Image (cartoon, rainbow, N blue to C red):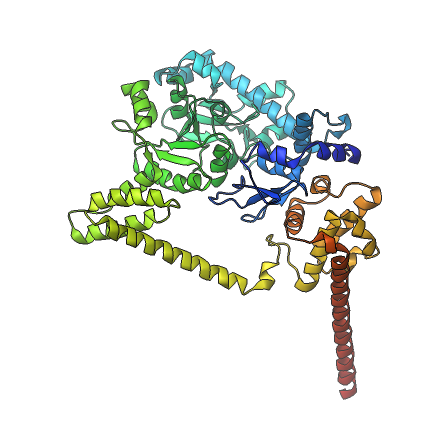
Length: 579
């Protein structure tokens, strides 16, 4: 166990505003600081930090908590590793006796991946890896760039990695958990990667977390990636972001594959990344927004690349990134373009990349024959709908002018259509909000599906008790004789029990101090409760009112139960008498 005194001191030294500001651009407003949520895509800030309460909460996605849970979420770390990161930041050292099993496992798997990467790299430059080395040389990669990316080769053998790692002291269970081997139907294991050029995947902390392997010849699949593991998540990592995060070019280029990314680095563009065998996700977009303000999508020129770009644009745009799309002319992908025309031509191509609105309008235009008046009018209407999504009136004006020039439709008519599109969207959103407002009982239910209040009136009072305890622990004397079982909501009763325990120990009541004892969902629920408005000058009266509501609802429940028991007894008596 980590001593509670250490946790309390660490949380006291880790001001939530300072920590969150390392990841989110915050603007003061009233008593809070607001910014774009790092956990979901949004244009309008709904994420706020309350330094006075040492808490954060997002009104959009519902995530919230204290400083420890923020680090756990944003860095994708378990509890102890988040404490370790905060301790390092605060100049403290985690007590030696906190070597938890989970941390040991994670550390062991990362070390195994590092040893596997070293093994693959050594094989590339041995007679066994001759085929893989020849392939990389044909692709134009220098020995220096191969070393920089740690490229390697997996021998075409069923157990070469198993044998090599066994000599290093790693057992088959660890190899399975790391995704380096596969278990067949007979229970035998064999190397997952065989006869492939290997690309180590390295996270932002410099750890090898997985691999991608490119088959030699025409085998399938062409690219094989590590499966999800305790240290590897495809949707939360990007190939080469550990290098691109340090670029001075002011932008990050998104490519479809490892080779495109590596070729761009060799050509001097040290800002390229690739997703790991999956389409770009919202988590990828949020990750990129931490390191750049501009993303350039540089996918293949085929139909699959176009579809992938269309899916990626809204994800990136929602995070506040400036999004541009590069059309590769005269080549199927960036790697081929660089070989044909060189880095200078590619740099010019980057400067000519379209912003996402130009790209959307061009994609839309390709669907219509503008020589047909009916299709031209339909393109103008659809184009106006696309432009109407822009928040800036200046931008709407500019693109309306471009659309007018393309279609021959008057700019004023297009601006009227854009205005109608915006009005329709706002009206629809207003009606949806009105419908939500008509269901107040649903509004106070927790967002987590597994948490539901059976008695909303009592639960609202129970939330009030928790909120006041967190904000003014001196009010505890009014309720500390209440048992957790008096709460109608088991989850609120559990939180109340933990708060009372902290008070009995004389520990601070802050979210950061509670995060090792409550689940993530419970902390998020508590952050939402803490974020609701309250007038502390009337705290004593409010606490008395909350207690009165809780006890009143208890009495109602007991009366209902008693009546049900009495009715059941009468029914049983009636049945017996009739017999």
